[in-house]
Amino acid sequence: VHGERPEGNLKQLKTMKVNELKLKDIHVVREFPDVFPKDLSGLPPSREVEFHIDLIHGAIPVAKSPYRLAPTEMQELANQLKELQDKGFIRPSSLPWGASVLFVKKKDGLFRMCIDY
Image: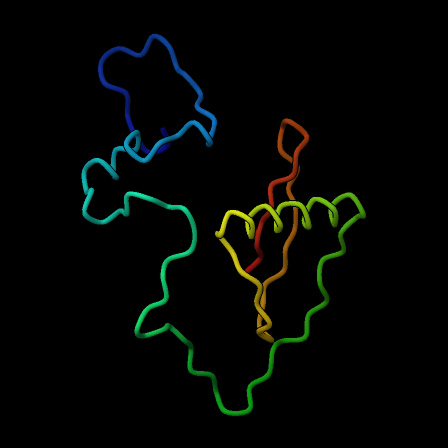
């Protein structure tokens, strides 16, 4: 697991897929259980005080050309966003502020979505 050091002599190293990783398998989660929720099934509940950034009066979003995506990348973006929305990890937003999305090809040929903040 990333960030953990093996104990004793290292004879074999096992790679875990992300979907196999359980919270109880992560050292920092075991060390500080009161900080981490038991279930990460989606977005956190609404809070009494929502975070916001006070903008300078009259500020407008920066006009920057978006990264161009190939048709296959656009389809992959749509698929990944739908999957994240179906799982409850993201929700639609109509804010004028946003971040560009680009893809990095992984060794297995799949795309990893990266957000350019």
